[in-house]
Length: 453
Image (cartoon, rainbow, N blue to C red; front, side, top):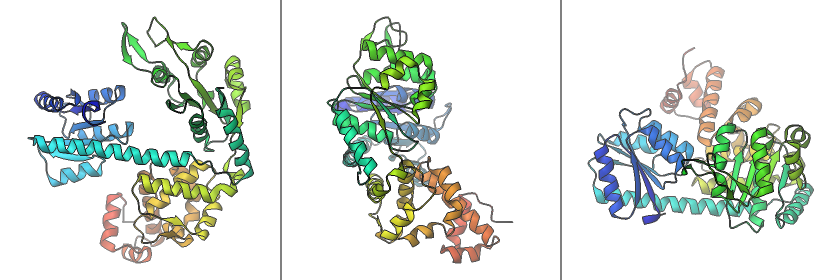
């Protein structure tokens, strides 16, 4: 991704700056595209693969300013390094850029050597980050925790079916780990050196069709579809019961004819894919899915056990999830004590593996600054002295959030709860929760919590 393989997107409202930057970077071997608006920048980023973005903070006459555009870019790809650029740079602007997720900041007029240095560092950091993530992912994906009887049966099925080239139907409750099982099957198959792609069928069906098949106009490719990108690999359709009847028919045709047409194309493209599909319940699938497609997928069915049937696997799962988030987010090394593990295993609010994973990540994140290597039950209770009151509300509402948002949501709920508990006496509250009063006032102001009755 360094040198000629890297592609840089420049978004700046001054055409002269765009041309100056792109000329400089092309001279040293980088490929560049530029635009003067946030809207066009986001459109380009969705269509093409870029290694780094240079983004102007102000962006006059655009729908989004630089900070808003930064948020949009990171929603599409949280790993993309973004260097913010501005002619009105100051320390506060630079700090705000980093806080909002930018990799770095540089002022106009540019010092060419400094800019090139920052770009190289950003790309090197991206490669290192991806290597770490790949290492953690491969290490965790190589482990199917099988202390429970149901998991041992599942492992045997996976090992048998992965050696074939059959299409597969996965059945299991939400959050039971069907995506993990699909990726595991792919990793053990002869297609393992090819791409694996996850597709959620609950998306808008017209957009889903374009994303899958691609689009061309006057024999010019406008959008390269997923099918072409992962040809000879494996595709996993989550919630296939939510796929439209029209799209189901097109998928069936691909399975039978091994070819497809881009939207707007006259000529077909050959295609060789393994399809893995999933649904919550078989009877629901049979009622909604086309009968001919159901028969194609129903030949090889794997039922994925829920957390209730995998109690013996919980200790190891918690250990894996905590190790993952520590490496990926560069957090302090921590593990769970036996009393903390027992407490987690008995929480009624955790219904599935997905919730368990997110909850463990959230705990590690929240306790990162606490000077302990072993997390105890008391540490967990200290996160909220009335955690049981939040079990069914906070946890269920926050499990689908990013860690940062979940933490902010918890802190807000926690502080509002204690304000009411201590009748809005901030001085008394600060003593009870162990937070210095001025720091508490700053936190309340930051979270926009009213301190008056």
